[in-house]
Figure 1 (cartoon, one colour):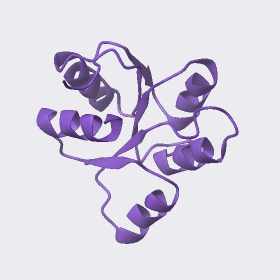
Figure 2 (cartoon, rainbow, N blue to C red):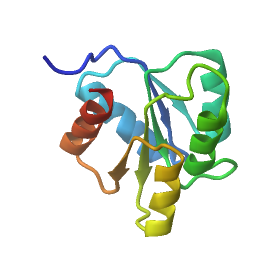
Figure 3 (spheres, rainbow, N blue to C red):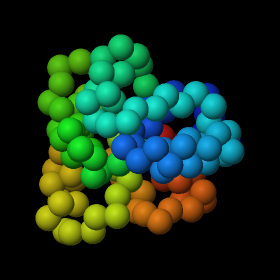
Figure 4 (cartoon, rainbow, N blue to C red):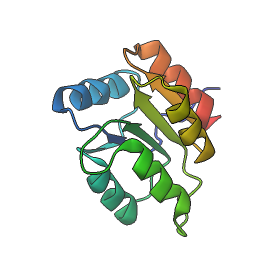
Length: 127
């Protein structure tokens, strides 16, 4: 059956080129309902105003990184505290991964990533 390509995705990435690349990959594989934010603060603001089905967030960002955003979402009293979140990261330190797991991360996309990996991870967390 496959995943509903109409899901609403919030993409949070501070690097303009990487954000545009990932947005284009999502569009190429059929996800057309993608909102974008340049950092965790802007992403948090969008979460306050709109409903999303999935968040893809970079880990390392200025102002509010992906882990800080994850913690804020999971501590929230609003309806999105169980929102599926995929962390995009080049980080591999076990203590960092364990901290994200403790806070309820749904999965990781490790840089460099492929189109196949992105689709597989989205399907995994949205199943």
